[in-house]
Image 1 (cartoon, rainbow, N blue to C red):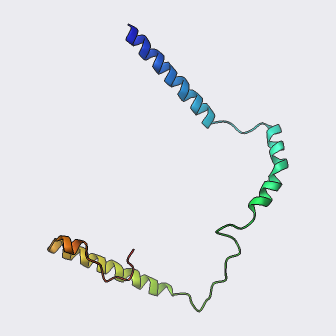
Image 2: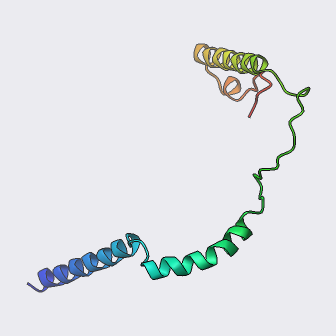
Image 3: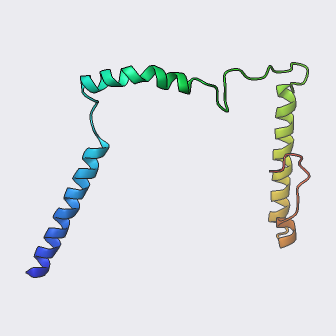
Length: 110
């Protein structure tokens, strides 16, 4: 009987802790007064956050002469896939630790 009461008390404690955590995680929207107070400080916060960071809006202009055509990129990817498939087939044909850890001829090595 004592073990049953102890298990009951521990489970009720667990349910109470879960309810508190769930209530804290699912709070509703702030009251209208809190929203008004938040609006007063929002412009200062917005001005501080509007400075460009790593991915800023003022990116360097793209040099059109140095751009690589899409067809060239697709051909490189296709060649890489074919080389990887050939390496996998050769490993399946004659598996060995050397063939597993050998480098591929693809320039797109990661």
